[in-house]
Image (cartoon, rainbow, N blue to C red; front, side, top):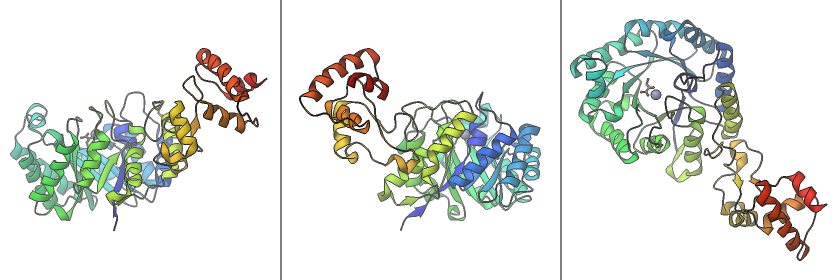
Length: 379
Ligand code: KIV
Ligand code: ZN
């Protein structure tokens, strides 16, 4: 039986804190409604203590969206938690996401503290957050570089204090997939109350491993993934929602499913890209312009014979109309013939051969040959 993986979307918090990506409350509501339609389980709507605007966004999103849980971020500080609790008062299902650094690097250099004091602060924060909402998520910041035994001790303590979800973030994108997977497995093996909470994955992409690490986390027991649309987020970004959702869908044998309607992925990606002024790279997996475009002759010929030769999913599965055959000087006769047929022209040898020679000359000059160019060629 397949197991459900819960999708925690942090586009409006970790994604929105990227320079240039800021949205107004009204714009955030538009994105939140699309995330709801997409089928995410949790929307992290903001960090209420950070600004009056962010506070208001959490309030308004809580009113506008009813299906997903609405989550508000806070540090393990009373004032932050109070602001998060207040901002969530209209949420049908509200969650406070509180936490503190867990690596010795953070404990020493950021908090000038000790493991003992961090433990106490974490437990106190969870208990205080519980006075506002039942659903409290704790993040052990920089868990990717934290001492394993301490991470297990911290996880046990916050679950004991009532945390319903424990987030094990690779805040700096430092881990390798095998290492990160083992970290999650270690927590399952060494924390006796671990089954009273959900373990969550939150990865950053500094080494380009965020999706791989997230999947490693899921395969080792985590059941919530923290992701953003188009992978936007601090520095090199967060784990991309569309990549994780489609990896779990395409590789069914892994035995996981999500509630996401994958046919909404491309429209939501476009919306977020436009609203946040953050273009999607052409070769981005799933939603990039070239994700379903075939340009070399060998690939085009194989694709036209049977799409499965070169595609592991249908473009329609992610909300893209159809695959594209891009005509360039690397294209072969098969692709040229196919495209001409779509325009209503039937060419067979030897006419096709002579047209192909002229096509190559044109493609060498123009780089990409579009339908208008083809008509010119035919004329
Ligand atoms: O990357 C991180 O550790 C975070 C936490 C605030 C969850 O974004
Ligand atoms: Zn983060």
